[in-house]
Length: 321
Ligand SMILES: Nc1ncnc2c1ncn2[C@@H]1O[C@H](COP(=O)(O)OP(=O)(O)OP(=O)(O)O)[C@@H](O)[C@H]1O
Image (cartoon, rainbow, N blue to C red):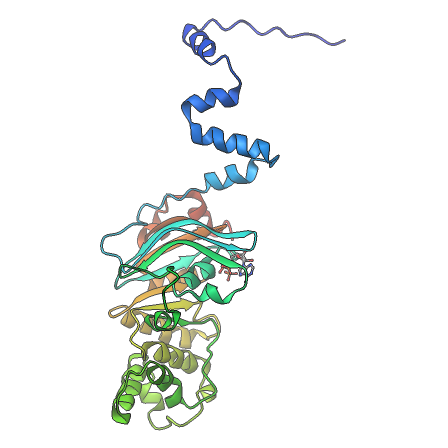
């Protein structure tokens, strides 16, 4: 036998008064308090879309305490990246300082590489990839249509996961960029650029007697330093590194990490790494990404010792990812 439960009448005078004022549907009543939330609710209702994903992403809103800093080299504002219908970077705002190493961390597929590639317009090379928002480097918006990406990619050099020297001599690998950009007016000047780039990359002493040797004949760690020398040879301001040590043994990794610390004195470095210990060793600031959102950015000490967001904490402590 079914029973009917009668709820006691509400006798709270404040609530009764509010209910009288809001004797409309819940959506409309919310409109008086939060028009944006209601607009989203109505939009979702009209589109017959389950609201869960939108609300879920709302919950991922970054704490982003240190995302904006004074006098940044790079300033990203409201950056979104789509691969076709896939929304890979969501409304990212982030500043990157002048002589810092910023490590990008987060679970696989969270958008680290996609964001890195925004910084020198490498995503332009991917069909169906669309980047919106603003990215200013030294005050210039590099997302602007009129920007020539060739000098941009010299200003913002990139070192990839797998060392990728050209099938040319060590000398020609490093001389390639300066020749392309007309940075040397005499052969002696070119020699000078090649030597200083190889010295900066910590490779000169190992290769100075074999500059005519193929770059591909070097060890993996040496090849990666050759790629760093190649990036340095065209006077960059920023060096992007996408898991630069993932193909290297621990000794070669330690050499590259030491080099990154030295290069920081002259360049802004943004590094993607899956190694939390590497991020802790080489970076001054860390940005944690999750499902395309920048969740939290802060000094390396804070992120590793006292993260503000639960998602960051779960990732750092190995509970997630
Ligand atoms: N060329 C592409 N075309 C379509 N989708 C892509 C492309 N590149 C990346 N994506 C998607 O965009 C999202 C972010 O990818 P991205 O490679 O930036 O992540 P990630 O954090 O660098 O991952 P990982 O740590 O595994 O390298 C993923 O869902 C990925 O599948």
